[in-house]
Image (tube, rainbow, N blue to C red; front, side):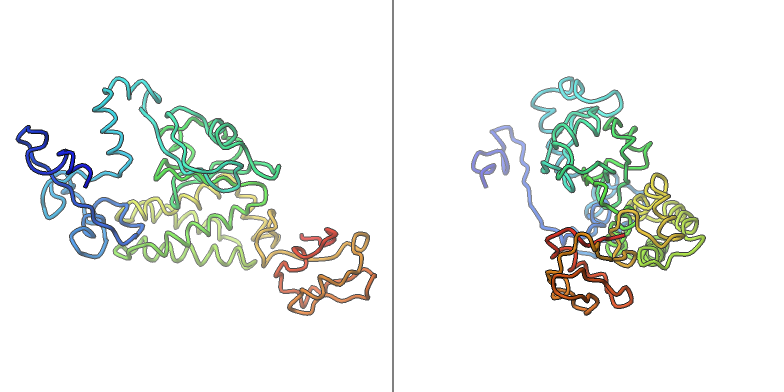
Length: 346
């Protein structure tokens, strides 16, 4: 309305004889509509599912007309370039990735939020400089880059330069600009499952590799975090990942395996611990935790016994209590309610 009132939209813009209007349409919020042809289908009133390409949207897009389809960030850059010139934009960034990028900095970070940085900064610059490092004094473990279908980058690659080529070499992507920071308490197998749960649910179902492949991967990861993983699961996951990337119709399926591939690549030992030792190194997977009580710290206050829904904790008042492992349902109530840090989680 403001643009029209200023004659920047509509008929005869600023007396130039050029007319242009704009209509804003709210989408249904489907993740697959981040793929350009799926978004066009949605805009045309159809179910959001990707089209075969070619033809590309620039040739035949919205209602079969040549279409320029980009995200808001890209269009915002175009406006800045037109106002300030291409040379000013190209002066920022790296040789292969010019300009700036907006990231959503979140997770176990001291200062989260939206940040805009020139390309060429390192992950360390953003996480420990702008973000203020890891909260609660914990150690940095990894950062997941690129949204739900991005990849996880470990601590020893913190000095990776933020541009398309460098991030791609790690197995991550620039994507939508998500930057999820993880600390030592994060289970990387559980993290891979978390993101795959999302992409599997958001698959439009049009192509078999994505529709069925992500579901099979989801089932394997669920078994692993539940302590039911078996020999060969890691290799099967890798095989499925590569098959889905090669066979999926659109970017959702082609990138959905990234969280799994990168966590296997950099944190394979965590997968092996879950499968071979039935242990979660981060102690985050409930099914793989064991609870006990340190008799030297327990004061016999009975708070843990009162909070235990399974009746697994016994003991006399003012005497050390014990946990019956066969009855324990790993709800974590004893640990969260103990004031003396007497609960041992392994």
